[in-house]
Image (cartoon, rainbow over all chains, first blue to last red; front, top):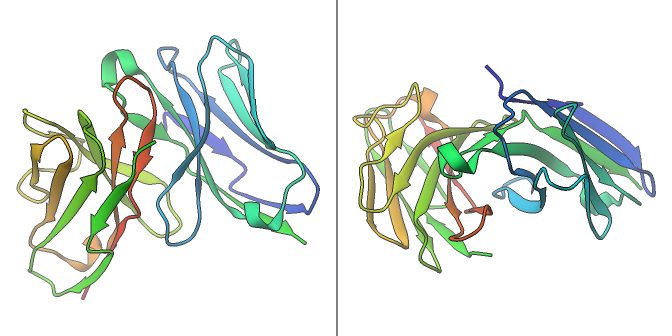
Length: 114
Length: 114
């Protein structure tokens, strides 16, 4: 059973546009929600993460929005650039019981056209 | 953050042989994880390697097939034993940074079994 559901599977955005990737979860014990960016041939890189005590976190052009009641969180990439073209994975963790084990979404392949 | 290296970066192996993948991190960490990633797919956790104790394997993965060593706080190995073409995949190690929720990945080992 997929613990974290991610959509869309692929996304095409024009340069300068906003890319939005959504994730949903069921386990209310999850207390850490990171996003990873992966380029072909590379390992996933931690991009940004949020804890459930805040509703939004922004780092540069990347923003996580978190809706605890809906059990959903999303990644927004503002002013998307061709260099942002990569696969993005959302994840969730319950540090209390799983000691850092991450549950990953299926990934979103983002293509930004120049 | 943490700097993680993996060896080898890639290998082509014959059916029935074994390959040991090394993971080295530049700081002491308690938790290390081994993942498998099929091309274009998400990450699947193989096992958690906690220093000083036996590795904990996820459902579908067994110690005889994927023995793991964790001799100290900066190093771990994963062996893929008696390989078959179905073992062709990217194998990634990750570490949980102590005192944080942050998990960092190595560059991966691309394994092809012929």
